[in-house]
Length: 403
Ligand SMILES: Cc1cc2nc3c(=O)[nH]c(=O)nc-3n(C[C@H](O)[C@H](O)[C@H](O)COP(=O)(O)OP(=O)(O)OC[C@H]3O[C@@H](n4cnc5c(N)ncnc54)[C@H](O)[C@@H]3O)c2cc1C
Image 1 (cartoon, protein in one colour):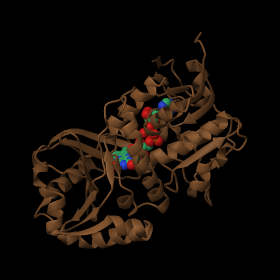
Image 2 (image 1 turned 30 degrees about the vertical axis):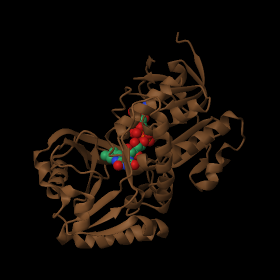
Image 3 (image 1 turned 90 degrees about the vertical axis):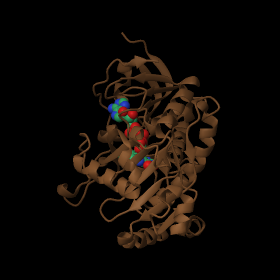
Image 4 (image 1 turned 135 degrees about the vertical axis):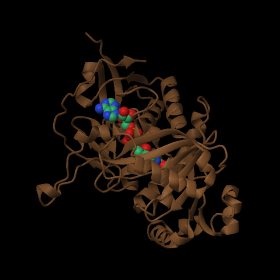
């Protein structure tokens, strides 16, 4: 029989939100268990393949104002938290040198579309401060590797990026050294299956991303055909290459009517080229079409990508809610808090969203009868919701590996 260990909080899923929450909660004095179906390297999470660009202005071309505001708050949190993590873990590559946006001359209409969307969504003062039009000379000054290649560009100043895998490693390392108890290879866990793993927790925080799909019921439409899945996956494909001859310093977005791409430089001449966004739950390997499109677009940006070495062709699905916004749900009776819907902005917004989820967990632990009404609920109206869920049921947890 498995001996039972008691915790204040059991976190399900050690991806981006789960690791952030584990570190935040253990530092606040909670006894925390972190339970993950896979291993400690994070492979299997969307976070592991992400480009991890922190680009509130660039994302405003396709996102709502809420994402921009969460993103701005989160970039400040990342800066502070990564500095704290670096005190006891390997420093994580992080930069805020802006995003360069370019387009080929024939695609000029895409630039007008992009800027008009940004201006419609982002706060005007942010646009005034950060959106700078560049001529060809300016493009070359910002990114010498692209000198002479584009007659115009846009610099979105202050936008950031970080090393996703480094961040996952640092968060885990610091969480463990602060006392988080990890269970790896636990199988498909849900809130009801924790006793099988010998875990009793006062509160459960569900950070399983797309793995929590069954806990996010479909939203009814006018007819059964129109009902929308409460959580769905959006397939994204990225290529990781080693390209020592390219020498880009900041993320570059290439506007294109059919194949818009970004190229995010990582340490050691690595680049993440992405990303497709396909309305599909398919998680099979990357298609030839996607590989051709991504790599051709990168080659059209800079011919030295022709000699790059392809290290990985990655596929993951982004956990997405019908409104494409993040949500936190709290059931006061079952003491389960769920955070999800980080979609394509997880790195951009996870600090502010996870901080809010941890505040809800803290309120539950303190016996607050209205845990959904924490100050973060006022700051981010509509993001935190009180719900009453059907009783949890158990799905195939294994015995797990304890560390
Ligand atoms: C191709 C691609 C590119 C991206 N680029 C960016 C970007 O540039 N900038 C940005 O901000 N965001 C980006 N994102 C989005 C970001 O990666 C996600 O929003 C974020 O990782 C979601 O975090 P999460 O913690 O909710 O889920 P995940 O990171 O997916 O973590 C979920 C974890 O839960 C575990 N799990 C699932 N089910 C179970 C279960 N039943 N039991 C136990 N464990 C379970 C999984 O194994 C995983 O470890 C990108 C995503 C993709 C796919």
